[in-house]
Length: 588
Image (tube, rainbow, N blue to C red; front, top):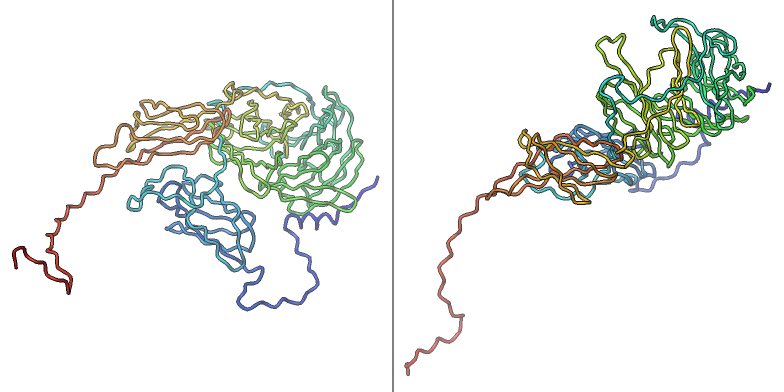
């Protein structure tokens, strides 16, 4: 058996992550600076003023960050900011109170030693500020620069309680009790008694031919099962010293090679061929103790880190080649996905480009408390599968819990959904995996056995397939409902009825729209007609966009007209100097 120890991998991968010290080149003669001219690496400065889009109010206390650089600034009470950065072309990212998240301004060129003044930058507020018309009621001028906000499709997760969501179709695939024989798994402890030493298979994966590979750590082997669930042999794990590889993850490439990651001291990665022969193995950098999941494409394993980034690696006799960090899980079309729990009722799946720009942020709203969200992977149709953990109940030790499985398109559409029970505590790294046929495989366990279950996600509601989304909101006037308000949607022009409680709903095909809200009736005499409330809306199929409360602006009184000034008395014409006097008739 031939093994290649990846000592060069540590330095190569650390350099890719920015963790290794730079290699020192031979010292060159320093260039003589030209008097009055900045050096090539002299930092430049970017300044500007953030103002709410369509308003005169400024965005005070907002954060301005440079994508790809450790440089941030905070706007002052006048909305102004100044940030220093090395010369180059950058994207600025804006965030803060009452701002739509992940807004940016691209292609900001910074020259050495010079100041790039952006002027007034319009940023999109989440809700219309109360001081939108200030100062002094001036009409808002058109901003020369407007921040780009990502598309924000919104999905209302099904079910108002645990167990009420559409169930997925279950198919029991493999089951086995404790032991070391064929069809058995190494198990210890009892998770039902909250035993901290309760252990079972650490991870699993489904190969390209539909075979199930189980990382049976306590038995020191990888067990294999055929597509019908029958034992199909296996092979022993490479020894990791005296400890079992219980904190380990498993992935299988499209060519049948098996990759095993062990989170030890130091972390290690081993590659096996389809017959179980070790091709290459070695130690990784200490930063790989922060690995959240190991995935695999055709031949290159991909590490998902706990900070949401990813590192793609390639093993070889000469060491390891690394690519990264990447901004998330590769989704195709040059997009990368990451998922975050925003609050107890909201989670977000963000799709970014490789430079970190957020292109789309899919908002997931739940009526059941959220406890977490995880990326399962990308299936062969290009759908992103995520697992949303939900739990409710007053007893924190035994809450009613479920896992909601969602299949999402890159446009934020819902392609499949299903509610499944949580898999309990007999797994360290992985609970879900994807099979080549598109089903989701879950590892379940209790005190007596381990089960691998395949779930078929149900089709989404018909309106999602038909391609319509829902836009809703509530119009208020002085804090009270305004049922007489005039709500319209552009392209195509459409009037939206407003209910007595001020709420409205309209179904629209996927696209971008401008929604306008005007006060009912004609503006009274002596008042200035206020500008309509406008909201930019991005609609996706099957999604719900909730605009919240839309307060109507208050009409402003016309200024008092000035009193007319009396006209001056006409003056007698004065003849010019040296001119002859007029001759009176009959004077001769």
